Length: 165
Image (cartoon, rainbow, N blue to C red; front, top):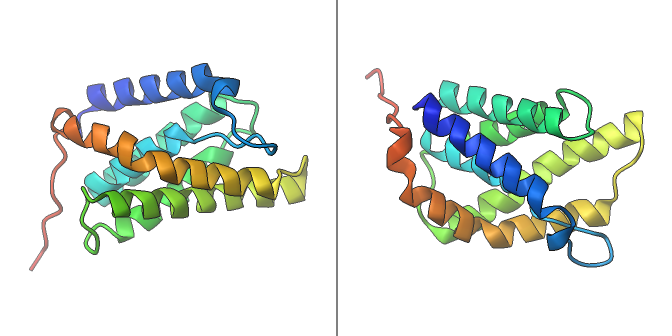
């Protein structure tokens, strides 16, 4: 994976996520999509395991540094999402919209579960309605965002995993 393309993706996704802010909130719970999570899923579905996990952890650290969350919260959450996504690489068709919707929904629920657990332990508690609404919103945007990122995957020069046998 090319680091230049990775850093540009991280910069753009974090910038768009911050810039959208309150403009894309939906419903009374204030749910909004997690575009950074979709970038994590894109990297995890195409990159080899080690590069995907390191990339997801790096994106999470950058998100932690640009939000008010404790350092490491999103790094751990996105690493768990990347572990789940990498484990499904061999089982799913990477460019199919249904795959994008399901990975977006499941990944958003995993990341939301980490945030909910942290809120219950450390406080302030996060809203379950906001986490679930955000998961639905992220899943609905996943085919569009991941489809657009798939068009640019050549810039990342992902390598296929090679089997030892």
